Length: 441
Image 1 (cartoon, rainbow, N blue to C red):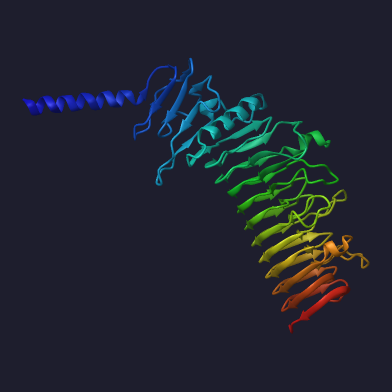
Image 2 (spheres, rainbow, N blue to C red; image 1 turned 90 degrees about the vertical axis):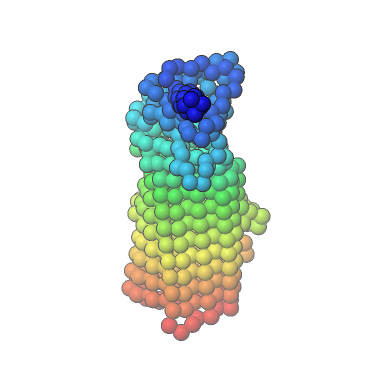
């Protein structure tokens, strides 16, 4: 009899626990309410949480809930989630906060608020905010430390989106350990004005560290026609330990990837970069006219596919430009088609350019200095000189000049394959080059 009573009591307690872990009807939350069971709460039907006096929610695990709004009236920091276990695949949906991935501009303001609230809730929790569908937005998205913003959904700018100049649709600002994975970023460029108030880029990692941007499709961001760095696909600035990998970056009115000043240990790997109106990848280690204090350091550009598409109103469109950067490796990239340089080095120290293929660069005017690979100081004099540059194992074809050196110290060139050069000379050396060693081919 005692055993039977104990069994019945255990069953009753188990049923009570199961009922406690199910939200069946609407609940007004006053004060802090915590769900710390190892099993996640299940939200049944259209049940929802409504913020009452001082209402806050803490979940050990994200609830099991339909992809529909379940949180009403809560401020962005009112809802928090515990850290995911190492084997968990937990995620939350911005729809829980009122987003709609239906492509409707009428949902833009609600989408921005909901996605940012979801990202705030998973801060430092190692949990993903999962996007599915197209979320039209009228403002910026801000991932938090220790979170993931995950696709396959897309954020898309409303027509005539007005943001401060040099803004980005997704901005990682002062955060650590952020991942943006498989997200579409659509700047809706054809429906934007061309003045400064309507120019913006795709993804920005600024003053942040240990971040990953991978497998994203960033396209049609809107910079000014004459350039100015506003419409870049992906940009870093004063960032460190950032991996930019396996992204499609296309048709942006700016650079594909811009690694801006004081960035360290940045890797751009296996990206496909097409038809952007400026430079495919630029490592730009300077602030205005200061060429000494803001240099980039330890930059790897590896196995990227970069293709320009010459347009009459294009500012310039090098495949790769590395300027005022130290310890750079440009390795096994495939650069194709523009009227300027394939790979340009300017004001750098300790650069290796190896195993790249550069095809169809420089146009057809023999008086131009454009080349498949160029090391130059341009108009910057001593500040633009490079040193310790190695150029070997590259394949260069169908370009105005092959390798063009006009300002550098301590350069090694060797074992490159250079064919079909319009100006005939495979290696052009200017008077500003010192300590050149040309290895036998």
